[in-house]
Image (tube, rainbow, N blue to C red):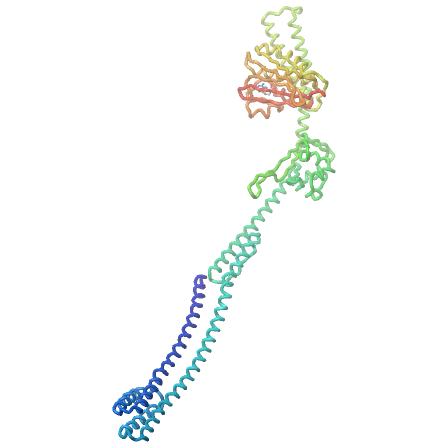
Length: 571
Ligand code: ADP
């Protein structure tokens, strides 16, 4: 039954009780009123008639008295209500008839009077009797109404006490159930087996909880499965992987990392990485950049493990993820150590090969160069114009070959970490003069003006003169190479933040932004550049950084380039 109907029935029940009380009360009041009316109507009338008859007897005007008596007697004869009243009235009639025949007879008058009094007594006794009956009935009615009122009160009281509980009880059950769901207790169920809306709601709630429970379990199983799959992948990786949370506590390390760190995962899991790093050199190197003022470790890392030296490239990933409120914040770090020993060995072999080849080529090329110079000497013989042109070509190409082999040799020096530095306190002007002299001829060939702009306060710098000159020459040669004929190149030298900064600014073809980040990489040439090895700028970088300097570029495509480097000032 619907709650609406139940409430309606409840209210009707209360209404029925009120009606029952009202009906029974009015029934008893009506009955008592009717009884009382009878006394008034019947017995009172008889007393009134008999009183009139007695008065008529006392009247001296006999004719009128008889008439009055007769009238009241007739009324009395029509108002017989009590048992024995009919006989008494008949006796009174015959006594009246006798009195009428001899009205002077005192005895007859007294007899008639006694007959009238008899009827009066009869009716008065009836009044007393009826009064007793009414009193009795009134007490009984009072008792009935009291009992009925008590029953109605008890029923209404029970109803009033239980009805709100009956409505609120299921609501409390629902509140408890919803709280359970909010706390992810999907085993919560509501037991209401009624056919009303509460029953339907409980059924729907229980179905929802069952589905949530199933969903939660399937989700959990899925999450656990995904977790174990990722763990298996990480554990089977050939690279060492170390995971830290956002507070730098160790979350996991895979078997390769275990063997490199000589620590088992159970030993370090959950520990604060800097604490573990305090007693583990390799971990200290790996998390260096996460420590205050720490710099990232230089790649590749040479690590001795399993009885041999291996090379690893370290990558530190800052993992970001979405929090519950949608923010994208740091949730941890993953350190990956990639084993590059094989590539390193190949690289070393390549470097050695290049070093050997360039070294071996240098002598014959130098010999060719020397021979060409000798051939050009008129003391050896006068060459005709065509021969002179050929000799020029040979000299030019052997110079280019010498430059390339020189660069390759420098490169091998850099790659093997064998840069021999000869640092001394020199003036920037010294370096600039040598470099300008070296490029003067090629600048002249393209009618390019080199404008130098030196600040007045220049002082000594700590530099390897040869290497720094080499870098400046390289930057100037590139600037000339990529500028149009007749262009201007500005060379600015000034003090900057404890360094002396050299800038070479051209108005040449410029460099597209997408290539700027790769311009200092080894063998990198901008697509379309035909000449060169792509080694010049990478050697410049190595030479400058070896002297604790910084190198950089700013450029706009078709808007010229500005290459610069900074060398620390001498104290
Ligand atoms: P290379 O020795 O082959 O010139 P570099 O390392 O010196 O190699 O230069 C790398 C690339 O950078 C070149 O291929 C060239 O395209 C570009 N580049 C260098 N300097 C300039 C410059 N001043 N203006 C425009 N492009 C330049």
